[in-house]
Length: 360
Ligand code: HIF
Picture 1 (cartoon, rainbow, N blue to C red):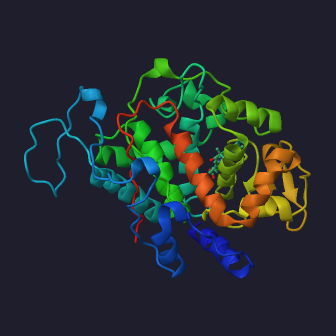
Picture 2: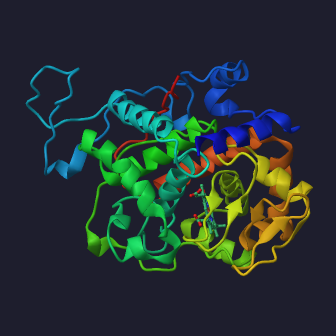
């Protein structure tokens, strides 16, 4: 299956796609290095107004103070006598391990677990309700039924299981932090924008599970998108920016019932989703499955009814056009919106965010 990813990558190389720019706000050095064809970079400084300066600071006490974890990894020999307080360096190790597994386990879907990790991070976070302050990635309640069985979460066990060995290796990290960090890692490793991230989620028990129906229904239109993402506190611009994540991955008939990828490079983060929305002709797919669109030219791509709503609605369309034209603007605005998504409802103790180095 890894060859499928390569096929897609080759398809990009063959096509006339514009080069993908990375977020200048977060990653000017990255952009330079990536455009020179290199994979690794460091982008520590200038992550955002609120996080300039501190990247090696206190990560917050782990596991609510109840359990103390001690360093047992080979590289730290000293006996630690107090509670383990992870630093950015420790979280970078978690990042590196996820990145390593993404490369190692390439026999899945289009050659990467990256997209399904992004979906896990988003579904863990997207249950947030600003009125009640409930839901969100704090708690990682998707570990439990009924939330794990909610229709919208079908298939996400694959992502949770993928991350289990990482949790075994770094038992001090909460699942909420692990899942969101994995989403950040996946986006960055798939050549997306830098996503500054901060720790602080604490796992909660089954009682904190959110009711079914908080995640979006793909068969609906713009009113539904505004209702769901408005409940989380997003505005139109942010809703459209987030939607660009559908440049990643695919739909599966045995999960949502829908079928197919949104673009020709489902393991590379690009602004292709927007370009295809405006450049291609989309028609209803003729099949026995749920109503979805397919591109008239190749009939190999797909769009959900909620995706098409982004060009049917005038206010949404303005942003679709902006992002289709300018990948750098999209990368910047996506990053800001995704940071916000992952932080909804989390009682952070620190304002400081970490920017992780991508793998070499
Ligand atoms: Fe998705 N999304 N999403 N989504 N999504 C699917 C897959 C992915 C919606 C529906 C679906 C967002 C918003 C919405 C990803 C990331 C994000 C699937 C297919 C459906 C049906 C699932 C399957 O069958 O495997 C709806 C209705 C949304 C509101 C408009 C976010 C913005 C785009 C918030 C977001 O980040 C990713 C990644 C996938 C691919 C998963 C995979 O396994 O490849």
